[in-house]
Image 1 (spheres, one colour):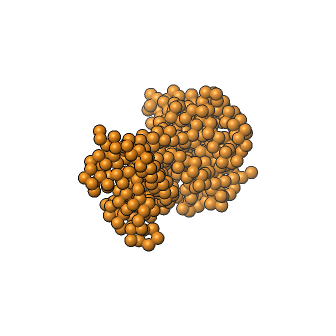
Image 2 (cartoon, rainbow over the protein chains, first blue to last red; image 1 turned 90 degrees about the horizontal axis):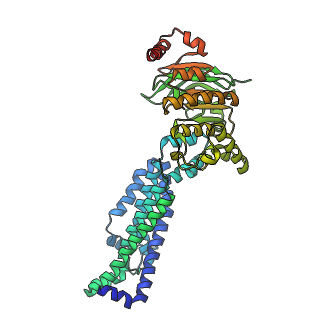
Image 3 (tube, chains in turn green, red; image 1 turned 60 degrees about the vertical axis):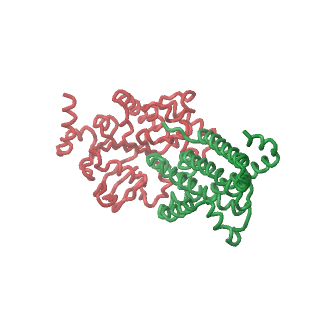
Length: 212
Length: 247
């Protein structure tokens, strides 16, 4: 349990890096929701765009994470070294589960329910906000949870381009062949992923609709 | 006064190989109840959906209150028409009270007035508001859901109500009870009704005229007494099934 002793001895740095890590993942998830949920709604309304948009987010997902960070660095405006570039990469990775779950959640609304809502004289906007969106919320939140958990893991790699976070310990440990350091980064990150999964699972159960 | 609904030579083609209606004409005066019967897939539900403009006729014109449905703003039209589906039509994420009060709220009624109306209607359909208002649809039995569906359809006091096999998913005893209660309700509410059903006794009980649809055509449209005397082969086929189940 030497890594534990290390964490206690270096608690100042541990807190700072943990806070950075949470910040990176939190901002990336919010960014992915801000882009991904409207995109999912758009795909639901215009199915013609489904293939190209989902194709794009799928392709992003297949790029190895270290390579994606590398690809972004030389780009003007969004590239460079640091947290901003890492954030963009993390948002891109988080998009897939959010977009696909939003589109799938909306598509999964019982057509009979939708028809009843239309027959009662709901406008398209009312149908979306009062019926489709609330009914899809559980599935959408599942996507957000998956995106967050993936993000916690991926954000450790962000340290490679100077974005900070718990990956700093891991990369330092790898460079120094010091397993204490690697574990001091990896174990808190894993704990964070589990905690995020658990907490967002609670949110999901609170807001998801229980169907009969 | 304009008839509540009039079909003038209406045909509808849903797409190649899909259910179609051909040259349907009938007039439904205000306050009457048209019961549509026919085999599965004959096009009964399509007739309902042409009335609230979920579908538009391929040829011919559907008039509601003397005005072609294509000339109505679809949202306004639908809010003047109550619609009852088989139990699935309730919104699963809303409580009973929210479901019943949906159209009044869409119409911008004061919350107090909506709440009052909801209590009044739940009582009318035999559900104690204090017990049921805050339940969700999945916490109700099939019969209770159906009562909520009826209450919701008439909540904003629409002059016309469409019902698609409203009692179809219920057990025979509950169905018979609800039909009888609905018959009494119908006398109080004095609405124009179009009801789709598989059940000939139900059609005779509730309908002031019975329309029989066969392969997209309205082959007979008569008051119950005359309908039962009709010699049209499809009517005879329907009545034969009826007598064979009774004997």
